[in-house]
Length: 103
Image (cartoon, rainbow, N blue to C red; front, side, top):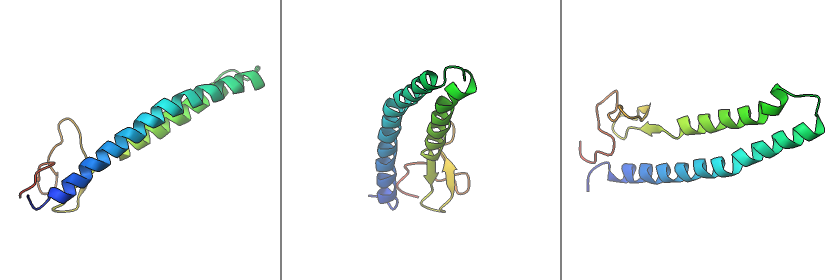
C-alpha cells in the first residue's frame, strides 16, 4: 500500500457515486423537463418559443455544471484542484500522476 492509497480509493468511490447521480439525473431529469414543456404547451398554447424550451435549457445547464464539477481532482500531495480529462492525468503543480500511490 502506498502513501496515497486511501485518498485514491476515496476518489474512485466518489467517481462511481457521481456517475450514478449523473445517470439518475439524466434518466429522471430529461423526461421531467419534457413533461414540464408539454404541460407548458397545454397551459400556454400561444406562448410558443423560448418558454417551451426553457426547462430543457435549465436541465442542460444543471447537468453540464454537475458533470464539470464531478471531474475535479484534488491532488493528495499538494492539494491542488484540477479537472481530469483525456490528456490531463498529472497534477499541473507537482506532477503526481492520477491514481499514483507512491511518490
